[in-house]
Figure 1 (tube, helix red, strand yellow):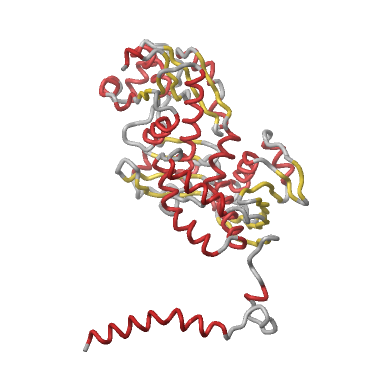
Figure 2: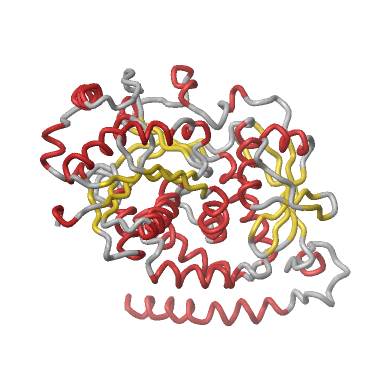
Length: 436
């Protein structure tokens, strides 16, 4: 179908790989190429991007500000689901891909493009996430994945060939020595993979690798005094924060605006909550994960993740649920967490099964409102209190002291235990009979 392609939207970051990719697509397909970059919280990585894209040969460069969309429509629903992949990974890269794909599809339709292109390799998860998202949102668009084309791999077997190609085509990239790892940054996290990290015995928490981390200090370098932060929840979403020095923190961030006040809480939009929690968590060494995970394409990979704000938010949300969510509702939701996390990780965010699970999650969050107080200290999140007007906790029922028999009659437990033991006794009798 390549002869039919006249206009391509390519995912573009401005680095060597995507810069070479942009020019290669233009020349190989003889097509107009639009550079697309979704701003999902990369920070200074976007500086000078538009000029670089146009000099590289793009007809347009779209820098799409999706930071608030990413926080509100992707991170927050996932936090409500308590989604963690394989017990450790808070899905920072995984959840960004459908957000980016949605933006790319919108821009492709606006510009009348025939195809979308990406620079994900044939060994990773991102190729699956991008393409499954596009299949759900715009199945009429062709997807070009150069790294899965033999001609592209033959032309660029290594970084040296890319540097040479960039010089030959006057592509404005800085051909510096490659870092000993690869990075991917967004509002929720930063991931580090490949290079020296491919050895799962390599200790990435040591002093030699301290300069690698961006969002957080090491727990050893964190303050010797704990810091308290309180989170205000409304139906499963954090809507406000309270901590010492918050006004100064917001001023230093520069791009976070107060949305109002509720008592002693400063109300913030989801983006503001994430930015602020990243700052608080980062200075206390919160949210570092080193794991070997199972990729969807079949291999195991080792990754290092920094997720300071997301780790705080997830921990606080769980505490809020513990006080306000019905036991059986919680257990049903928790039973679906591995499936939900797997769907996000594997790229099925826009699939009907994820949307069905999300509807259940949303319903479960209706009573999840109130306050949680946490203590941050040297990589640890310590629960320091939770309260809610919708709390299911009844001190009269739970107390070990006497004087509240009207709330809970301990004699009732006798019949409860007998009924639950009935089938166990029957099973024991059957086993005994089988021995005779």
